[in-house]
Every structure is written in structure tokens, then in C-alpha cells.
Image 1 (tube, rainbow, N blue to C red):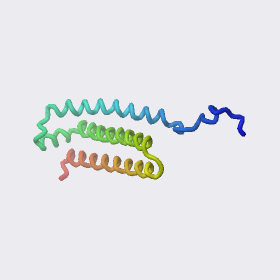
Image 2 (image 1 turned 120 degrees about the vertical axis):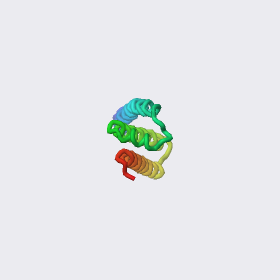
Image 3 (image 1 turned 45 degrees about the horizontal axis):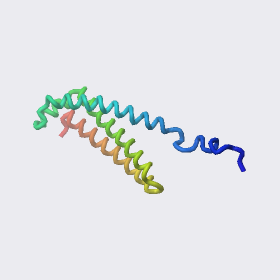
Image 4 (image 1 turned 90 degrees about the vertical axis):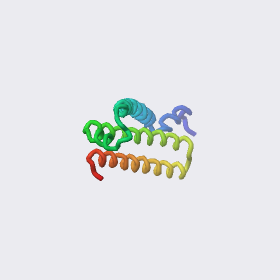
Length: 126
């Protein structure tokens, strides 16, 4: 029999101390997405989106290329965090582990494909 109180036994258990960091990561990425999405929408308003040459020329500008890659990476990161939280909350056992692995893999794969596409368009590689 332990002389520790129930509160003392419970302290330190649970989220392993990374809960606040996860929460802050999601909030910071959300703020970055607001800024980057606002830039994208304001930039896209003046573009002739039906003309691929105009869009490619716009994306070839170094600032636009960098900001588009940042937007893509931020969207992927924020989505990965959100999906991870949902999977951790609603799945259990091996299904949770498998879901987390597949989710992380897909988020990284899709972000990489999008970034390569942005770079190919920006540098005119066909």
C-alpha cells in the first residue's frame, strides 16, 4: 500500500508534458496560415487564372515562389497536427498507430509533391 495521495499518483501522467507545445504549434501555424492565405488571395485577385502562362510568370517571381512554398508547408503541417489530434482522440490500439503513421506519411508526401510542382512551375521545367 502506498502512502501517496491519489493526486500525487496522477501527477506527471497523461500527455507526457507535450500538450501545451502541441496546442501552441497549432495556434502559431494557424496565424501563419492567415497571413500567407491573405497574401495569396490578394495576389490572385489581379491574376488571370485561366492563363497558365500568367500564373507561371507570377510564380516565377522569387518572393512568390518562397511564400507559396511556405504556404504549402504550413498548410501541410497544420493539417498533420489536426489529423493527429483527431486520430489520437478517437482511435485506439494498433489502428491508432497505423492511422498516425499513414497520416504522417501522406502529409509529407503531398507536401513534397506540391513543393516540387511549385518549383517546376517557377523554374519553367516541363
